[in-house]
Length: 481
Ligand SMILES: [Zn+2]
Image (cartoon, rainbow, N blue to C red; front, side, top):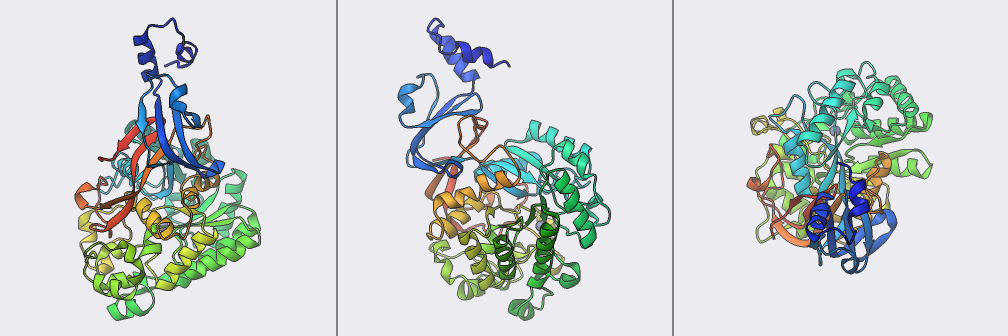
């Protein structure tokens, strides 16, 4: 469709009324009125209208209603917050190969429901995203079946086996936005150094799941008091910190941007804080489970609420959610750690050490999780709850301003991955999220649209919710009032 011709003609007074309406509809236009617009990329935080025209941000300002053709659809968002479309840079869509857990259609539907207009999918699919053909397949399918934008990461090593580099240049040509072996971690430091050098040549950031296999061995939960009490094998914090330290050294050596995924330990935060002060191109991200829960949760809800849940009064409704000991929905990699680690992640988010928020949305089928703790796969879903949990732990508690929190879901990941997203600048893609900060809701299993139901947050009373998700100017999801 050639929109240029409509641009010329759309306001022509000679056109009959009916055709103006038709043209504006074809141009996919929407005027959001009266919301609090929070756009950290442009340091904008004010009540304003936002005009979306032809898939782009056309104007942001006051009283646009008066200046805009009456035929344009109005969307009253007064009392709501309007932000650039949220970006989650750590999502497992499980396609190709593991579509019993999730696929592009269901994963992006969950993203839209959570307020996300863009997701970045991880390459540990089957086969792994280690070749241009698989990248093309995902792009094609996302175009056809996805309801939000899908950006693709490529593997660092062939088959994510940690032995031989993947064709990084070819992957870049195919359109990947970063490389990572997420789910796995390259153990050979020389191979990781070469990966960083190649990535730099192709202007790609490197993301890393930090896990030293020797130290972690077959650990299934944090090594500390609770793994001993429960008789489960420990996954020590050092197992993460060793690789964070390695990545800092390699980022310094090669000058490549290296990003440590899903940070879980106080030691990792301290290492990154110190390295950033020295100007090393290292960064990190945090997921809601690591800044809300602790390892006491593996001992059951009673122990959790008594030991580490006291400070989470904000999470408790009339009855705090209950779960048994050894519940595999509290098994993730890296594992839930201590209350001190949780505080350190929060402190890292507050002082800017951790600039990016994400979910590590990791769907697993029910039959996979319904086994003994030792045998269950690591990971939980997260796209539909992460915004509420971030608002509750960071904004409602006044640890962070709303704008700073939103930056960690918009401009910060966009800049890190060189995406032309995460801003409401005029001319940018019309990706917008509308948020009701105070909406209280309960996350019910039957409301989740992910194919998998492996969330520890079912039954939790949450506060704050995306009420509309707009991609390229089109509402792809709106919440019932
Ligand atoms: Zn991971």
